[in-house]
Length: 146
Image (cartoon, rainbow, N blue to C red; front, top):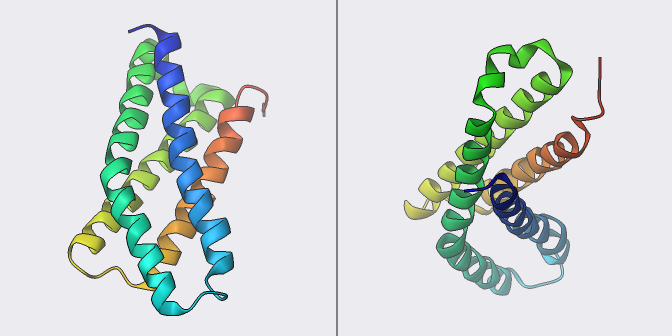
């Protein structure tokens, strides 16, 4: 598969994933206080039900395309930490795997009936912060030098 196709798949999957989390953190949390808790619980259940069907595929495309792109650059990984770009890429990859662990944790908690409102909010806020940092690094690691 060409690198251009991989980066396009990676970008679209990232937009989808980040868009969902952005919507949940910025919009849903801002209307939570204005909507009765029973209605909000139904909205949250509907969103998480749909997300459980779609997000595993989105994350699979996101991580598989990212790992395939990394494999394309694998010969350069032996000197990864010798440049600011490599160091920032390493941080970006660490944050991405942390997001994946958050996702697995959320899926586990949801499937076992342990996902509380506070856990839902904490996980989504944490993933949102991770994503902001990942976006910053993705757009700036080519320009930041130290």
